[in-house]
Image 1 (cartoon, rainbow over the protein chains, first blue to last red):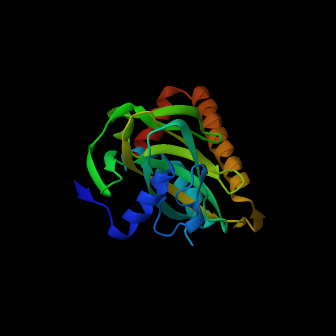
Image 2 (tube, chains in turn brown, red; image 1 turned 180 degrees about the vertical axis):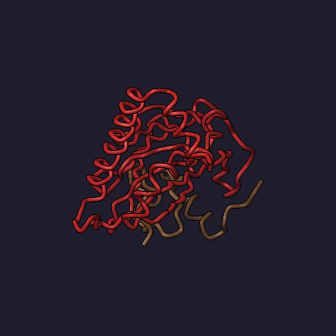
Image 3 (tube, each protein chain N blue to C red; image 1 turned 45 degrees about the vertical axis):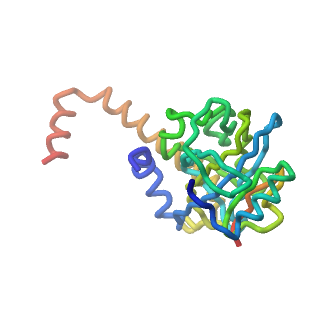
Length: 44
Length: 193
């Protein structure tokens, strides 16, 4: 098993508990991560 | 980058003349098992007009949310995306199977903006969490570009340019039809000297 970056792991786990897809973009704004029907925001 | 060869022939002159810039954006997806498809939209940089020229689907892996680890590769017709590209590709289903995932980059030629985002409808009908990634290949143009001393919307100018490319080849075909074969052969020998 390959390990996902540690600082993302907890965030992914919490978001998945809510049944959400997790969009991981290093610069995506927070509001667009872990929401069921949302957007991949442009990095800023 | 073989799939982009047509791009280099006809699109590169336009990109070069109008100050377009090559760009790509990569995102990872952790997709839970869900009976309800999930819609996500790719919103490009609002400071530019963006022409999507390709998509790359990465490999798909099982994902364990309890440990945060990625497992073995998973290929399944029960996982995938519906997507479309305005003016270029109609809405259709891409299962995460070899024939789709290995077709990279996936050629596109559509304009994308906040008002007209690139939409992906994601499906995971398995009982597993999966990890995937997608890269969007983009040419970013200034909101307005200068050409022949005039200011243009790059999308309008691009559509006009492509019509002229078509018209040029159409006209060339007409000329060649009226030209005796021996004359055409003579031209060709001169060109390849």
